[in-house]
Image 1 (cartoon, helix red, strand yellow):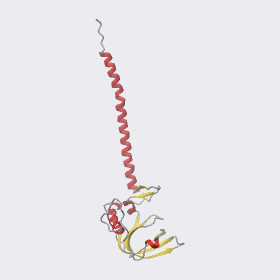
Image 2 (cartoon, rainbow, N blue to C red; image 1 turned 90 degrees about the vertical axis):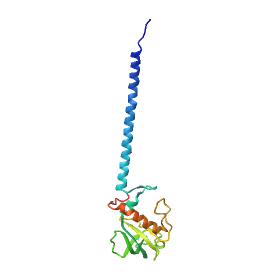
Image 3 (tube, rainbow, N blue to C red; image 1 turned 120 degrees about the vertical axis):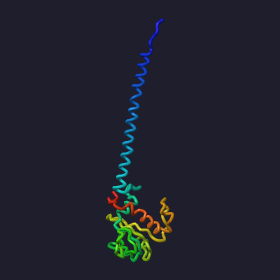
Length: 192
């Protein structure tokens, strides 16, 4: 009777299986490492974008700022009543004068009258004399001021500020007060 020792063949087969099984483990390790690098790299890049630029890109490709970025880029934030609206230059611009009773930025604003220009086509009807509003005047050349007018409906955005607001002015006031602390120390790098 001839007995064949298959144990060596078994060892060869198991060694071959082990040798084949090792590369997928290495591939999985490399794949996991590559994914980790991409994830952490993406998070780091996203964090830099938020800190440096303060925003992202809106639907038409123009850069937009986060709430904190918007406040950081505002040279003035004030609340008061509109005193006058007059055409300036060729008629494309309007100068709006606001009787200020509260400055949010800078907090030590001492001027009682704020004057700014806007290129909004409906400026004469939007900035009505006597209406109370909150205005953010951007430090960026050519930016239209952001205004929150009393009596206009509060935005319906999913924001905890909108539930407490009676109108757009209340909403804007709460939004500015909520956003100011996070904007302190941020530098305005513009909209891209």
